[in-house]
Structure formats: structure tokens, C-alpha cells
Amino acid sequence: MESILVLTHVDETGSALTKASLEAVTAGMELAKQLSASLTIGIVGGDAGAANALASAGARLLAVSGEAFAQARYASDAAAAEALCRAAQSSIVLAPASSRFARVAAGVAYRLGGFLDTHITALTGAEAIEATRWFYRQRVEAVVSRDARPWFLLLDAGTHTAFAGESGAAQIEPVAVQLPEMRTTVGGFRTPSQGAQTIRPDAKLLLVAGAGWTKKQPDGQVHATEAGDLILGFLRLASASLGSSKSLVDQGGEGQPVLPFLTHLNQIGQTGATPRHAKGLSTCCHGEEPHVVGWRFIGDRRAISLDPNCGWTRGKADVVYIADAFQVIAKVNALLEAAKA
Ligand SMILES: Cc1cc2nc3c(=O)[nH]c(=O)nc-3n(C[C@H](O)[C@H](O)[C@H](O)COP(=O)(O)OP(=O)(O)OC[C@H]3O[C@@H](n4cnc5c(N)ncnc54)[C@H](O)[C@@H]3O)c2cc1C
Image (cartoon, rainbow, N blue to C red; front, side):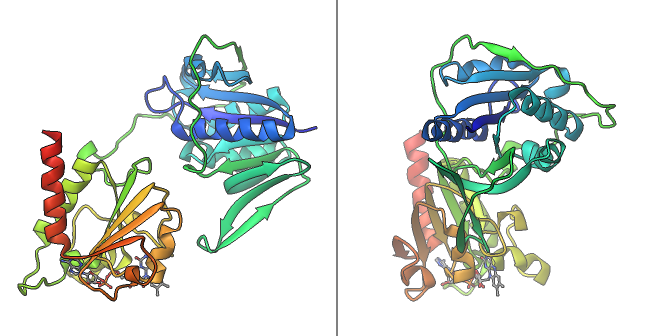
């Protein structure tokens, strides 16, 4: 008989669980139902109060809390996860693939004598548990099952709906942790200011900028500054995340005009990221296969290109606008601005 533990942690506010943690809770609830297995949820954070959001989850709630667990740090996070696993004694451990848990999961699995699989996108099970993940840049989908227990599974974000049950005064069992000697002191976070942050995994819309934005336009001139203003304006007004083609982010190294806010972290595709957004809008990008393979999990795909023979028009997008992206985005920004006013 399987028993399931879902590991969760608080977000930067310290008072709520991260969205990815709440997605893992949904995955745990669904799997527990399918297997008729018991469900325990472990919470790591400075204050166990965040567990109140799980009051209606129908699970046993264990919490490791205290000052040392408010911040991400390998030694304290690994000790917390290990203590929760030992307290729950579960055969299956689900956790979100957040930077906080992805860093400690392999170490914790080793301490428990268990086995870890990562990048899990779906779980099913009646007799045996089957975990799904993608290989070879999302081209091959595999279904994995294992006899080893405890079996740790790190879930990719965006693959389950976030648990949103009614909050209440949850019954929480505190779990004590024997902390090892700490060599790392967390001094705080340094992040780019809100305006400069262009990668937003939780955004509904992905805007992709292609190399066309910095190429010579019909008037024979390059309009890189205008392109940057239009793109940043759109991101601000639509709260969108920014992706890029490889050609555009590579240009900087080749001395060509660049958009200063783009880095290789924005790159979508075979050698870039494969984000999950409900909608995507590609602009000034040709839609070649090594780029489009990164759009695998985008729900609704649209593109604006001057080229009626671009890859997008060859069956890779749901809607293609054969138009000048400078004009279209300027118009869309004006409409969004007017709608906000
Ligand atoms: C091994 C390998 C791995 C790769 N991995 C990746 C990857 O991970 N990600 C990736 O993106 N690429 C990758 N590539 C490169 C990929 O094949 C393409 O070269 C790249 O995606 C092209 O970028 P682009 O479409 O932005 O540029 P271009 O091919 O230069 O296309 C620019 C487009 O902009 C259009 N345009 C210009 N001005 C306007 C305007 N005003 N309005 C509308 N449209 C306009 C043009 O018509 C053109 O279609 C890889 C290639 C290889 C060989």
C-alpha cells in the first residue's frame, strides 16, 4: 500500500505557499485518490501559518518552521525535507521543482536510501504508479515506473492546477529538526528591479522577439531603440513574459544592434527554454524548427511576420498575421494603454 508525502515551501512573503507547491498538492491529492493512498503534506517555512491554506486538503499536515527555514539554504532545507520524510514514512514523495527543492532533492533521496526522478509532468496510477517526463528537448515522452521506495518525484511547474481550497485553522503537527552546523548565512536577496525583469514563468502570455526587430526595415534603417521601447511597453501593459530567438540573443557577440534587456536566459527552443504559457505571440521571428520546438507547451500560438512563407505559416502557428510587427505592436500598445486609462 502506497503512502504519499507532498513537500511544499513558502514563497518570498513567508506567509503563503508558492504556486508550484500548491500545484504539487493537487498532484498529490489526485494520485492519493487514484491509489486510495494516505496523503501527508509537509511544509517548510519561517512560519507554519502558511499551512492554513491547506486546511481543506483532507491531508495530514506536518510542518518544519522557525527562523532557519524562512530562507533557502542547502543545509537547512535538506535537513527540513529529511525530517519531514522520516516523520511521514511515505513511499512516494512529490515536490515542486523549485530552485529551493531541486537543489536538495537528490541529497535527501540519498539520505533516505530512495530514488529520485526529475521533470515529471504527469502521474497516473491504479496498480502501479506511472510518471511521465520528456526527453531529448521535449521530443520524446517517456513513462517511468519504479519498484524502489521511497520514490522521489520532482514535478515541473505549470503541469497541474494550483490547489485553491478554503483556508481555515489547520491542524498542524510540528516536526523538530536537528540542524547541522551552518556554514552559510543568508544575507538577503538581490534581484533586478521589477521593471527590468522580463522572464515571468507565471504570465499568461509569452511574447517572443526575433532577430527581425534589429534588422533593416523597409526604409533601409535599423530601429533597435524603437523596437526595445515597443517590446518593453508591451510587456508592461500585457504583463507578459519575454522570450527570444537564438539569432537575436546571439547578435550581441557579433557586434550587431542588440536589445539590452535580452540575455540567453530569454532564449526559447532546442538550445533554450520550453516554457508553459496559455498563449504565445511571436514577432519578427521566422519560426524555424529549432526555435518552435521550444513552443511545445504553449497553448495558443500566434505570429506576426512580414514573410508569408515563414515557418509559422507552414503549420506551426494557429494564427499568423502577415504584417509589420512595429506597426502592429505600436497599435496594440496604444489600445492597451487606452483600456487601462
Ligand atoms: C543546433 C541548433 C540549435 C538551435 N537552437 C535554437 C534555439 O534554441 N532557439 C532558436 O530560436 N533558434 C535556434 N537555432 C537557430 C534557428 O534555426 C534559427 O536560425 C533562429 O531561430 C532564427 O531566428 P529568427 O527567426 O529570429 O531570425 P531570422 O531567421 O533572421 O528571421 C527574422 C524574421 O523577422 C521577419 N521580420 C523582419 N522585420 C519584420 C517586421 N518589421 N515585422 C514582422 N516581421 C519582420 C523576417 O521576415 C524574418 O522572417 C538553432 C540552430 C541550430 C543549428
